Length: 82
Image (cartoon, rainbow, N blue to C red; front, side):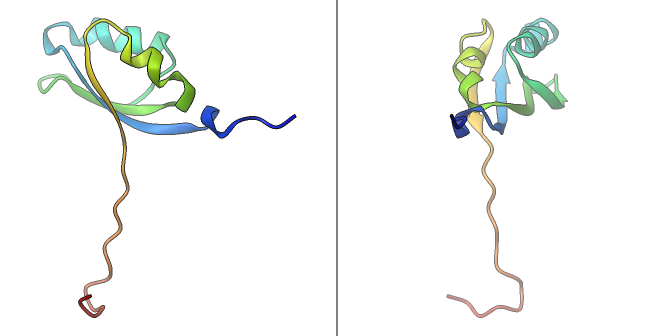
């Protein structure tokens, strides 16, 4: 039996209530988030979580948004313009 790829960790960026930042971050950790960066003044943080746990993060009281990280690769500066 093979595991679904939905359990693989994905990078996420979250916007949370800045007035309750510490409490919300702790609740997110309990919901499965591994925090990699915090910006409490802005009310944002980033981390990794199993993809199937994203709905649990969205359900945490004080979470305003959960977005998957996106990687954008630009061509080298010496490549021809397309």
